Length: 105
Image 1: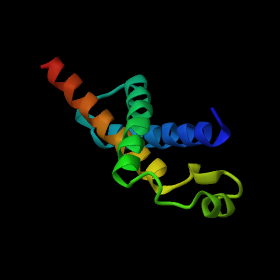
Image 2 (image 1 turned 90 degrees about the vertical axis):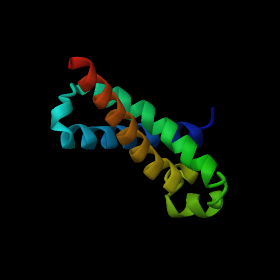
Image 3 (image 1 turned 45 degrees about the vertical axis):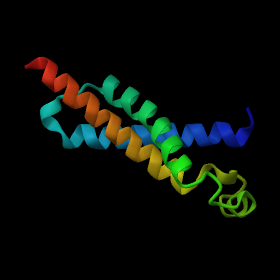
């Protein structure tokens, strides 16, 4: 596994956790603990970025231009990784919150 792949996964996990925390804070009635928000966000972030990256074709950004713009981070800091990670983390955390809320009733 090369460095660009590892950095991309870390970006997806971090943005997924941010998205999961945002949804967890917005959905007070779900009453999620930190562990479901973190795990749901991290897993959803990687999945959401993979789905968005495949929908956008995966090659929409020139790696050389991205490396120059990101200071050597390559294509790890691109739209599918950031937006897909945050969106996927938010969606999966929301689903987990809805399921846990339905199980309480």
